[in-house]
Image 1 (cartoon, rainbow, N blue to C red):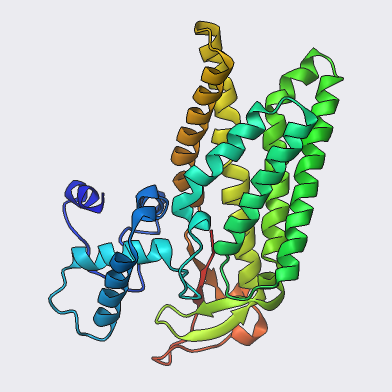
Image 2 (spheres, rainbow, N blue to C red):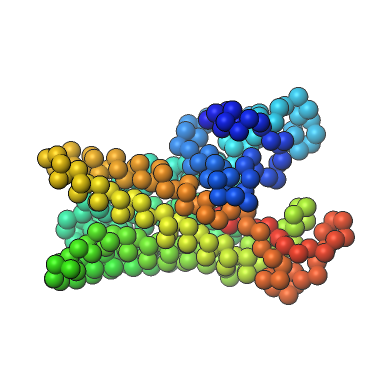
Length: 327
């Protein structure tokens, strides 16, 4: 996969353990990076392969990997970054990794679109928010965890999503022809509203206590609440507002066109819609999360007073800091 990209670009960049293989200042560079991060094939990585990759990176950090090529080092970092949390250093729960997002989210999304009764709507919204809170927890930007807060976020998101989905559906069913045409947007509105609440409450501890920030040279500066707020807002905009557009709105439109041309039975229609959902998530996920860099660059001027006039290892005034956004 990465070799194909390098053949197209013509060269492998010099390895940087604190950087990324692709230019993160451009959308296309971030898209290439997140396509690797969300590649479901990394789910097949064996424990032995992960240990080899981490060992190679540790050897490089100690100056003992002189014989390793840039290609080998970037590949080791690609595998490690997809599996290991950047702040805690622990292996992430497999179903919650971004590389598992497509297979894990396809069934709940298809279920929400295919739901016909109030009971079915509630069930699929509940399952979707259960998946969401797991993904939010696994991909949080900080290390702090408040189990009670996660449970509160879960309950709130389920209540919001089911309330909006059921309420909007009943409103549309009792409305006129113009209102009924909005039916396609009901699952999307429920998912966006509940998803934003889910992220906000799951990651509330980060906003209350702050997330780690560092200067460009690696100087650790402490934790910032302002940086945490920026991280959560950017996550909501990219993953909760932009990502659901394709899988929640495109499949129903495509199915309407397909049904007009071909007569499909219930099973065939469900299978076709599920495939459309999977394809939509696969295409939309890296594009949505590539809108903002995962490692945010934040001006010091927008942070708390204690971070003003700080200096790096060279004694230079720090004007901007780096912070992990989370996904």
